[in-house]
Length: 174
Image (cartoon, rainbow, N blue to C red):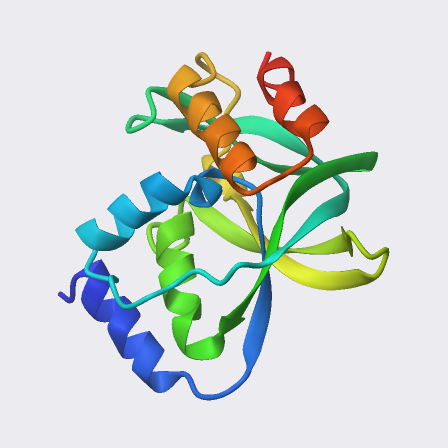
């Protein structure tokens, strides 16, 4: 059986043209952690573009995935009228989408893709794809991972997200 890397590389080779808008709100925004993950998985050639700050509309964070690696529950998205989640919108070439899927846990079935409507800083809105907990794997049992919340805060800061959002992350994890 092919490794995750082999599967991703085959999918990358098969993809042609086009791009997808990816809304990132989680630990992929932690630049240092992303570079470490990238090196560990052999994706040194992949550069995450700069992206644009935006807020996903009518969704909120929910800590619903128990992660052994993080030592507690980590965040996904849930529909919540009037709520918003800040992040960055990246334009990802179709050939690189499997790398994003691998990073987000779709390859292992931990996460699934979901559409989100994102308001950019200039007031325009775009449709993008985000990743959230696979409903079959969701659980509210166990504590929230402090390490994950710290990585979420670091990522939000390094991504230049609004200070009020960064400050709210620890409170949202309670």
